[in-house]
Image 1: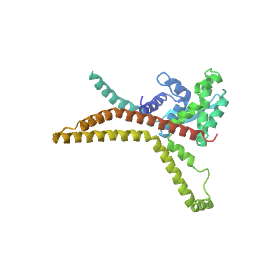
Image 2 (image 1 turned 90 degrees about the horizontal axis):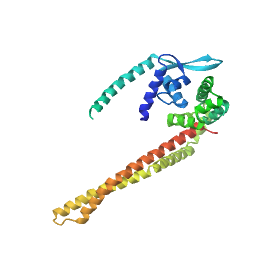
Image 3 (image 1 turned 120 degrees about the vertical axis):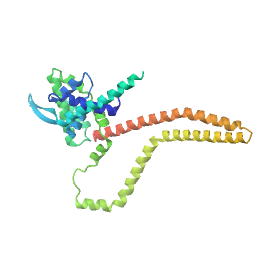
Image 4 (image 1 turned 120 degrees about the horizontal axis):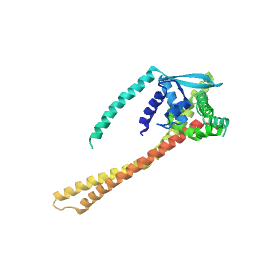
Length: 102
Length: 196
């Protein structure tokens, strides 16, 4: 897949993984593993980018005597998912148009 | 490898990054390893799952902009005193030409990596010009009533050569792009690793 396209798609994948409930790093990787292989370093970069863009907030919670970071989606993050879906509806329309040609 | 060994090695290899970013990344990896161990994996397995520190450095390098890294590197550890500023100002005639020399050397080195591309496109341009000239000469000779076989043949040769040589141009560009990309990645990895 084109690198630029993949980057945008991965961002939305991570947002989707925390959409219904707050999640933490390892759980995000596990939840996404059936559809996309994500390395720790890649996930770190994505989470930072989304945090900087105020699409998620981080809070550290104590878990079994150590700290674990939980990621919580913001309204802006939810909006990003919606925008992505709309963009893809357009692309799917184009896709079916191309398909008609053969 | 134990978790501590992995994290120590990683910390050493991220030396060129800002201090708080190193800590943040180390904590992130540590949480990842702990979570895997909580799930029942052995320490050894959990660390192996994360991959090698080299892979981590390469991924970070590919995802960080060169300008960000350089900016980080140029940041002063403390602010300058008045004397130091004065000294830098007085030494301007010394360090400015040096800086310019270094910059122009770097620029030359960068151009050198593109030499293959520049040469192949020049040859291509030459072939196209040759084809144009040949056709013109051939047309002139036709008008004069004595068709020149040399001009016509030359034009055909140049056209054929130009068509074939386009492939060489594309190849040279692709190879050069690939090489300069990996050089960039290497430089960035080096900056991230910092002084070991």
